[in-house]
Length: 186
Ligand SMILES: Nc1ncnc2c1ncn2[C@@H]1O[C@H](COP(=O)(O)OS(=O)(=O)O)[C@@H](OP(=O)(O)O)[C@H]1O
Ligand SMILES: Nc1ncnc2c1ncn2[C@@H]1O[C@H](COP(=O)(O)OP(=O)(O)O)[C@@H](O)[C@H]1O
Image 1 (tube, rainbow, N blue to C red):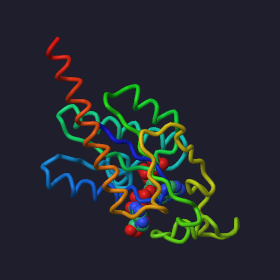
Image 2: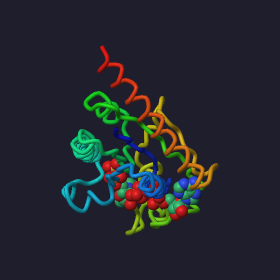
Image 3: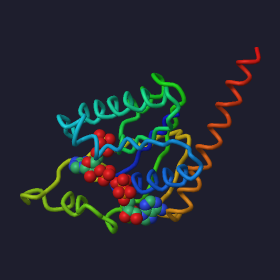
């Protein structure tokens, strides 16, 4: 199974992914987090933040996830993943891909601003530190119209969001197992 998260910087993708991973480890459920930020320091080092590069980034993360997922590892792709076309592409290309929108209002993100990115994006146009392509401020984020799961981190606690995503994963595992056992008995 591949869970492709999408959501703005600071929405809580990494926090929730890690928390679900810890919870799953207690039940010996293998989860690998494929984190955009981390892969941008290795496999995706050559990529920037243009639309083309962001889409190529997601394609590469999707490929890595598919290789692990084929061997029974549940993969969580934790990236902003802002474009509907490439999210759909992953769903079409690989088996058991679920889209989870980690949603949070811009006002709350500007308050959190853990990396100082929003402050930079909101500087005046002629400021030397101005960030010109921050997703959600001055670069597009296409909210998924029909996500498989929608979590609002400005309305629910980290624990509540973790539990919801964890239950969603368990339900989908059960659903997959039932499908395979029906196919095997034919
Ligand atoms: N311009 C701009 N827009 C968005 N994000 C930026 C930008 N510049 C740097 N960063 C940092 O890069 C992280 C996003 O990388 P992703 O690989 O998740 O992005 S994408 O899916 O390819 O759009 C993102 O990480 P998260 O905060 O974890 O989302 C930021 O820390
Ligand atoms: N319900 C919530 N779910 C996830 N993170 C939350 C929530 N409420 C507050 N936060 C805080 O928001 C920040 C999210 O940061 P992070 O997980 O790095 O976001 P992202 O990976 O989407 O950039 C963390 O400081 C986290 O403690």
